[in-house]
Length: 136
Image (cartoon, rainbow, N blue to C red; front, side, top):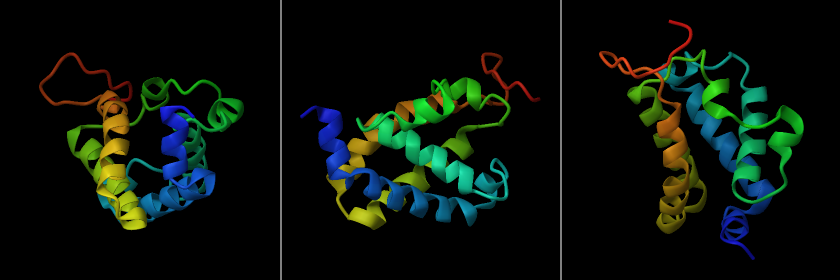
């Protein structure tokens, strides 16, 4: 068993990730800062996030099969993501995981793996010229 598949099992497999993602998007739907970044209907966002996390945590490559290679920064290029949006996204993601499992070691491990992805999505930092936000 690889480290990824062990974590996938700790998350409850595909069903556990589905529940986690649904809890996360319930939080997103109540957050005006983040809802400004998402379409009004979150169904497709929920499905893509679920497929991505199943694949990311060592399961079936649903995301790649359905949507192509992740290229997350490119796919998010038209969405203005600053530090407040990144922080809110991470907080909701981890809080939904915490609410589902109550296991701080699991939350910490997921954060360790997901934090670099969230950091890479930041494409808007006022005053910095090294950011790339394509829909200014």
